[in-house]
Amino acid sequence: MDINEIVQRLIDEGISLSLNIEVPEVARYSFAVGPEFIHLLLEDPVAARAHLAGVDKYDYLNWLRDRANVYCAATTRKGRRCRMVVNSGHTVDAKRWVELQGAFCEIHDSNV
Ligand SMILES: [Zn+2]
Image (cartoon, rainbow, N blue to C red; front, side, top):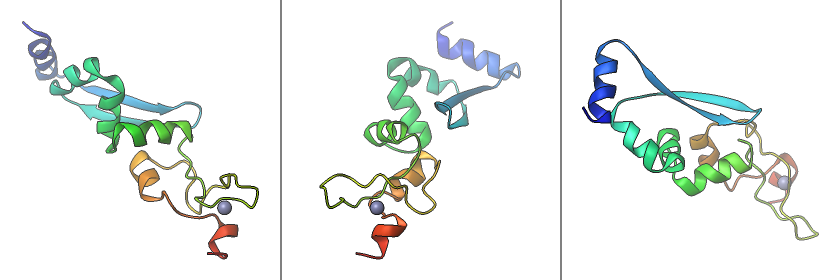
């Protein structure tokens, strides 16, 4: 039996598989997965998690880097990226994080 067959057999016996995606100390998302997912996970764990989270690998890694917060897209007068979190941008899932990119914080929103 190859691994897919073994996993399918276990699922048929009532075992369920889920994969946790963790933003350390911030949030944990759990996804049900099937036997077909095993190969993708073993081949490329990051791409597999990005796929489950519904975003591409690049966005997935940036979402983790920003600890699931969406930061303001404005540049400060000193030329740095604003470090304020946008409205409703605290601890969002990866899809929402992508949707909110380019948004501004309360301070910069009124100046645009
Ligand atoms: Zn801002």
